[in-house]
Length: 117
Image (cartoon, rainbow, N blue to C red; front, side):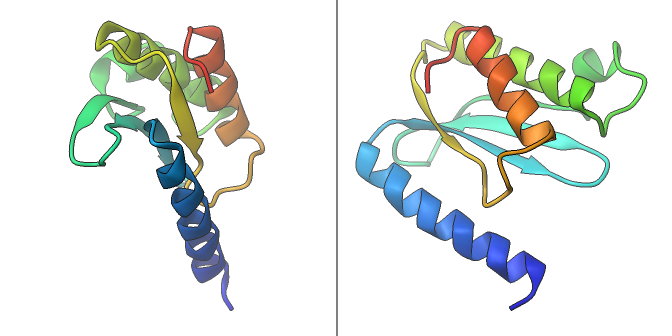
């Protein structure tokens, strides 16, 4: 099994567990250059809040979009937008990525900004 299919298998297993919790989910995606985060509704049909390193307001204060500092900023912004939308509790969907580095930095920043998970 190659690296991508292993990640997708982990993601599917995690999403099945999150679905049973019946809460909004904070899902992330990372590439080599950018990181994306969005808060999805319980049924997954609506995006309640989103942030990424491609957005001008997030990208403005960053010198590089592919490091831990950028992930921290995205986590803070998505948490602020989620709280403004009335969401305070989420389940963290790491999309099969290991909880390490940029993924961990984003999660920690979202927790510090007020999201509970």
